[in-house]
Length: 452
Image (cartoon, rainbow, N blue to C red; front, side):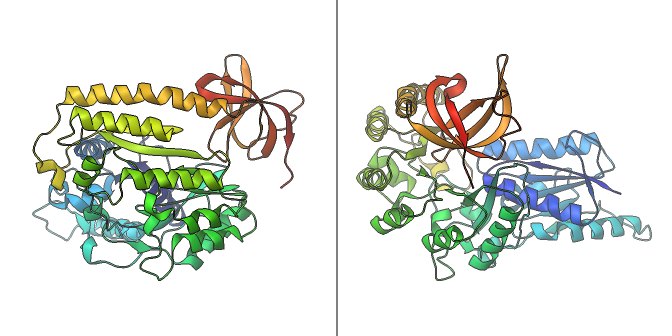
């Protein structure tokens, strides 16, 4: 039996695709081993969102080759798609672009067969390339999962590609245009995951808000269809564009008990002039209205976001506008990124690139601003009765706890004791939040298990 090892770089969509490729290899008879071990096949699902991601992809590919010089090294995904010419110079045997990952087992068998055929007199090393023109491909790649690495929560890819062309982003060139998965295929996968014991599903995509534009449907319709399925108890949404949260969208999902009131709304900047240079499709006022809309329909929703500091031309005044806007909104969490030049994007050639030292200082400032917002959000729950899905057992000091999340993605902990009895992992419980413990975790007391 051949051994295969896989390594994922990048986003949740990439992670889903890596697990799907692993499942395909298992079905083809491969034994899956950790990437650090010796294997016959190494698969690196690459990322290309930044120049740094490209470099990490190359490093992992070379690491695989060094680990076993006789192995078959497979590079898949975005780095291959955006830098196919450069990738051919790497220590790679098989290059697989996006929308071709489902062919992995067949491409491997082709490679092994050709390598075994000693009659071929090769002037160059054997290499197989499966990279199509992603901009011209309108088909959704059919990958699926019946289980995931996590035991309670399953990420489900429902959409690929992006039509937005933000000036800093290479993804439309790496992933192509919007392609959506058929609703019936999504429902089949969710139903199977529910039967396999998963309590929560997370809908994800490259540009989730665009789901259905190519199928004559929309994300709201998909959510409502999934909500009708038995088995799962939670539906969590991946990153959303603010403009999708209309009055109708907010009011209808608020009527769905399985929806998690945790909304990751991409912001990127709290200054309109920077948003314009980024080619984002909303203003700060429109973004604020969306947040107010969500807080109108949900009691205490968690609103999280992404912010890029040091975008080309960002002045101190523009940065201070972003600071003020962030404090006005009051986010639960912010993913803060220092702008990184990505060759091939419009932003890479803009004038007035911000010095790295300035970007670092601005990033640290936003982290400082976030701390009191995060604390205020968590303090609201103290004394409240909370419901949480427990996911793992951890140690804080000498005490063991079951750790999980509320629907708002607030971390909760339940002490392991004689009272808890058997494991509560993958169980939904209720209890009163009595205090905050390590890493912004809320401790629950008087815990009762919910009846599914």
